[in-house]
Amino acid sequence: MFKKILIANRGEIALRVIRACKELGIPTVAVYSTADRDSLHVYFADESVCIGPPIASQSYLRPQSLIAAAEISGADAVHPGYGFLAESADFAEMCAMHGLTFIGPKPETMNLMGDKAIARKTMQGVGVPVLPGSEGIVADAEEGRHLAEGIGYPVIIKASAGGGGRGMRIVRSAEALESNFEMARAEAESAFGSGDLYIEKYLENPRHIEVQLLGLPDKNILAFGERDCSVQRRHQKLIEESPSPAVTPELRSQLMEAAIAGAQSVGYESAGTIEFLLNEDGKFYFMEMNTRIQVEHPVTELVTGADLVKYQILAAMGQPIGLHNDEVKLEGHAIECRINAEDPEKNFLPTPGRITELHFPGGPGIRVDSHVFAGYTIPPNYDSLIAKLLAFGHDRNEALARMRRALEEMVIEGVATTTSVHKKILNHPEFIAGKATTGFLAQFMK
Image (cartoon, rainbow, N blue to C red; front, side, top):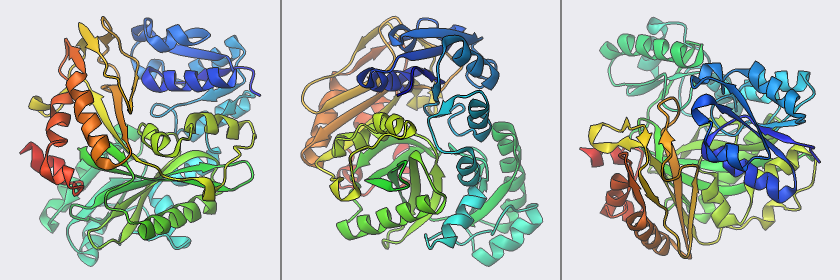
């Protein structure tokens, strides 16, 4: 057993890890910037350490401060949550150098899968389908133009070290390639410290399907079904559900097999997700692997009964999970709405500020993961996610009905949120029919 776990994160994911640790009987240490001094994760952790000012680069993104906090508090393990340093191989290596267990995959695995161009080649090597594209990093716009002509337009330029839609550009003609290439490179350098880019064929309006995995100490890989994350804006997810309305039992079996093969090929350990694009003809293609727990993991927890964060911690301790792939069953249907402090009428502009009134919904099948409360001030320094609202039902229709009810019950005043958009989406015929693709929201907002 770990003596004490330091949570190198903030907000609702820090609270989520604290809850799992409490059930396992493991003390926790919260870290916080001065902007988060009054946050709930600080209140509910057994100990807390201030690690710097509000600017993330001087607090949550500063490895030295996190290591020092672990040493001061006597923690022997670090849970990175998602975002910030969760996929930093350098931070994982620093933890190991200071005798701390990093609750995540090995640094070499993170390096391998964190470089999207290398990950793509690795998956191709074990027979996981990939889209036509460059074999590695594209040196310049001229090379990109030659590749695009061979692949056929439209193509998508992606940051090799990227994620969250940054360093990404869709190009539909040769004339537009050079300017988009340079913009993607500049954005990638700013966001990730690397301007390396690669190019793939761009699929028009596919489904975004991902498979939740857990690598165990005995080298086995558990697969917990798929999530459909097709409703997204600027490549950032807004609604997720499991199982996907577009996935048949036969296709699910193929997705699980491909995801497990991909994870096994790199000796994957801990929680992780392999993301695919699903075409309208039922063909799927590897997109990327996220080497961490994801925002939307509760969707999978509701339909499988698994506690993925607890399993992740047990796996890091070398403890057995007591579960095999043939015992993982998907029962019922779950939907998650990401409630962000953003104004949909102003192109989803973030709306930091004080929450003056708050009421979370309840009742059968409803779960809310959040770190906010009435009187809480949302700082402008971090991601705008303030709550994850989940609805579970015996089937998709019941889950939809419960989510509609929950959205009506939810009261958040003082700041604009995305709840108005969620209400409209859940009543849209295309979404109700389970036909929403990655192009749905852009057309819906028009």
